[in-house]
Image (cartoon, rainbow, N blue to C red; front, top):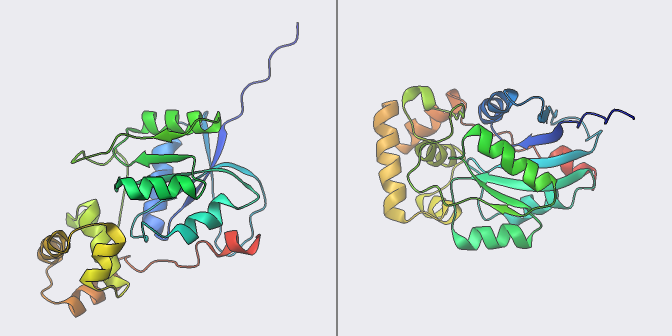
Length: 223
């Protein structure tokens, strides 16, 4: 009797504008290399192979930017797309599903649960995590400013400030209230030792908060 062929790992492409975020996520998945194979993508090179799942990390992205999500869901080499986020506004989940996402996954998921969710997606299931609430991020995740004590949400707000967004724009992009945005800004400023928006932008540019907005360029070129 023939010996069954071993199941190959699921190939996963990681997409985010911040290298430190991608590196942290890749390291977290490294422990499951027999089940998950992270595809390293160069933003200056076209996609050269099919991938089973694109994991789209929404750190400091426009959460409601359906156009970027559509670039991924329409890509001929992307099997399925999973959104990886803290923000579980019902409108965002609905919009992501309407634009072709197969999963909406919480950053509070332990690595083993994230891997199990990706495997379920690969098998054709639609997976929506429970809302994370105030849960801590999964062990191994990283983001700009973490070493300075910034929380993930404070770092996202500071990253959007570094991009030149106003408080009103940040609130709209993140689905936070204006008062919440102000509270995150105050806390972030205190932790990084600045007192003005200009100082915060300068600090952000010097400390890894400038995004690589060309990250999706190679995905767009193939369409």
